[in-house]
Every structure is written in C-alpha cells, then in structure tokens.
Amino acid sequence: DRVTGYGHVLAGAARYRQDLDFSVSYIPEPNPLISATFKQTRFAAIFGGGIDVKVTDRVAVRIVEVDYLLTRFGEPDTSRVQSGLRLSTGIVFSFGRR
Image 1 (tube, rainbow, N blue to C red):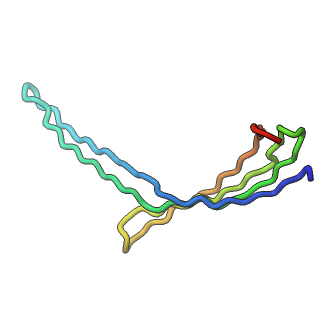
Image 2: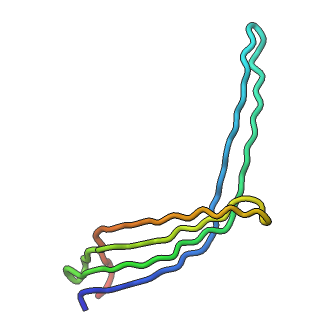
Image 3: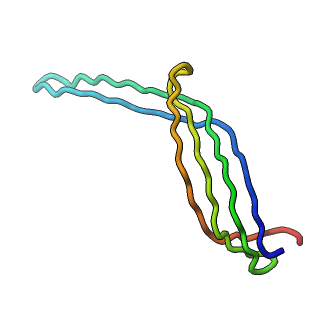
C-alpha cells in the first residue's frame, strides 16, 4: 500500500523550427540579407513509468521515473527518428479530498 507503480503513454505532436540568416557587408552599400525559415510539425510520443513511495497521505517520494521520448521529423518517406531517455526523481504532493 505504501509503494505504487504506474505507467503512462502520451502521444501528440512536436514542433521544429530553424531560422537561417545570411548577410554580407559591403561598405558603403547596405547589407543584403537572405533569410529562410524551416518549420515542421510531426508525431511525438512518450512511453514510461515509475515508482512512488508514500510518506504521508498527501506526500510521496518518486523513487524513479523512466521515459522514452520519440519524435519523427523529415519528409514522410524519409522519416528521421530521434529518441531519448529521460530519468527523473522527486517529491509528489497530492491535493484534493482523501
């Protein structure tokens, strides 16, 4: 009853934006500027879980939370998958009725 395990799955979208600016300085001419912006919104997901240990009715210690992060940017036929691992710990406060 003091130790609680949990799991979660979150799915949605991630946004990527890259701004490129290029300028050349000619004296006394003004600086020509070339700029471009590349933007993408693609699928993203987090899969994970963890373990909490209850200290009181309203406070628990999160011993560990492990999440796998996934994004897929690029063109649909040449998708580049980025993945990462997130490791967390902390204190959990519960509010509301008990």
